[in-house]
Image (cartoon, rainbow, N blue to C red; front, side, top):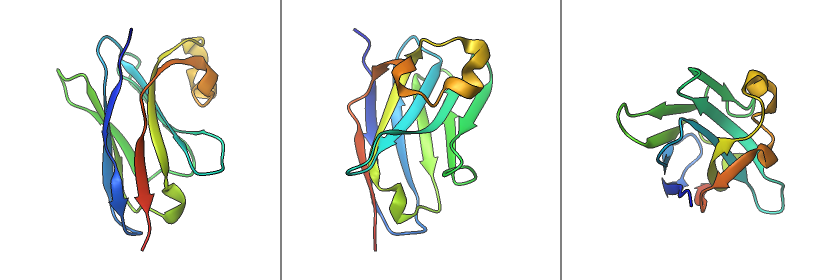
Length: 126
């Protein structure tokens, strides 16, 4: 059974920063999703170390950044210039089962990700 361990998150004021991390072994591709109260889960970002590609949802582009420590199984989602609408439970996922040649158009579909973390809360408020 693949385990994804998430940590980080918490509370920040609007304009502040937070970071969430996801640790998983054996996979080079991670997707980040979030679900706000009363809303459907939405895609946030995706990184593939093997393909050397990173994608961001328009709502977070320019504010969120994915990074990975070399030699580490942990990937980080750095969230800057946070807004109240960023408040959500953030999930990481791995084992993308769609065609890799179409990753750019398919990464946002959560049903194509096989394994999921437990989620971590991010709250942005004043």
